[in-house]
Image (tube, rainbow, N blue to C red):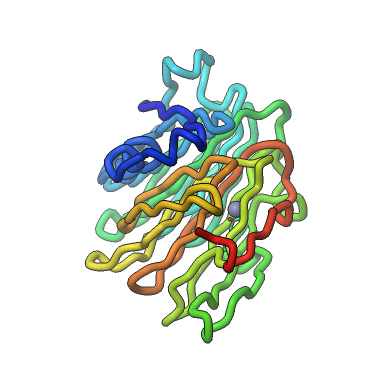
Length: 276
Ligand SMILES: O=C[C@H](O)[C@@H](O)CC(=O)C(=O)O
Ligand SMILES: [Zn+2]
């Protein structure tokens, strides 16, 4: 499990393209037939992916966690972004199809990931943060997620925000998780932009056509930078940074946070006209 360390906003101002990519880009989490994780030092959020083919993939233990098993002191949120899949938690099987979410509470010891059809494999995006209590393992389908319509086609930011793990949804210790789908012809997410000093955030872009890219914006509001992402790339957003993107085509993305609170609406909104 690779680690990434936290970056100071003053240092970030001098970063060039390579350094921005090295410190924030998680481009290696989805690999065929593998399960991969990156340990971030942003609220100790672990970001991962599981792409099972013919064989199911077992959630392993990692030296870095110094735990008896992965979820001994952690909780986990999983969203499938591809073919039909199954997640088994301590012997109980959950059907997790595209855009469905499974929350696994602290204390679950055995977790396996499988694809229903290896020709159309599942891609499970995984977040895990430290947990102090055990909340029930809960599945929420895409249809059951709370939906918020945001933006407008006249500003190319019409999108539907789907909330799964949050204060009024699936209960957790600190994980907040959901996904946003851009309407056809809309390309801007999270604009107007915001920060939330109380929570880190990670974005994972999916359903980005192979020959298209997302320009993801980072940095303090008066000192922004961009990083260009392809399908299945994730990017970490420090608490001081905006996180917003514009694609060369429509796309979807999973957002996930950990930190002080579970309140989705705790955002410091920025004026577009103040961005630099
Ligand atoms: O803190 C919340 C997150 O940044 C996202 O939920 C924002 C988002 O999906 C959007 O506006 O499109
Ligand atoms: Zn945010």
